[in-house]
Image 1 (cartoon, rainbow, N blue to C red):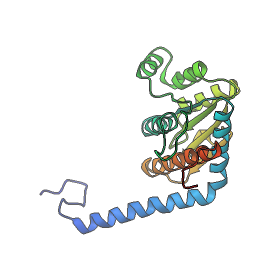
Image 2: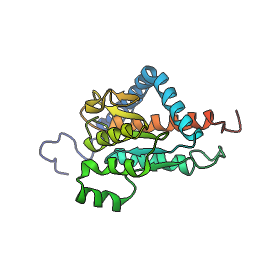
Image 3: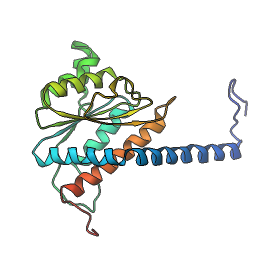
Image 4: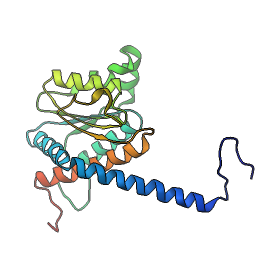
Length: 213
């Protein structure tokens, strides 16, 4: 098979590919370990803030772009439908603001895309609710505008960021910055792991524990 210009790899280079698999996955594991060790208290605080929101009758709004939009929808679904089949609980009120394609396209067309999430926070958010912003760069203007809209409405906010935190660093009540730059993938892997741990802790804090506990 011909080698493509600019690429030193070939289809039959199996040993280097296996080394790449190990290198990539072990780096991802080490990054998660670092984030856990440096932010375990923050993750607990985020979980408590979310649990208090649900316990007080509030709802959780989540937003992000691209892969972060997928993470927002993923986590919202696990809150509304279920996270683990071993835990029986009522639905928890969570809305991923990226889920409504009609609202996104109308907002982008009529208001400009950077205003879309802020507009949906205006529609759905209220004092006592919580906004979760997700951005691998920390520089997503649409998410940043949503944070400001949430602040104006008296909502609490938390963010999952990457790199150096970007423009969103210091703009939420609670934040975690995954210290990885150059690509979004490793940051996204940490974000979804953090989100899963938060949901697990929220269920426990609300009294919905697995049967073995």
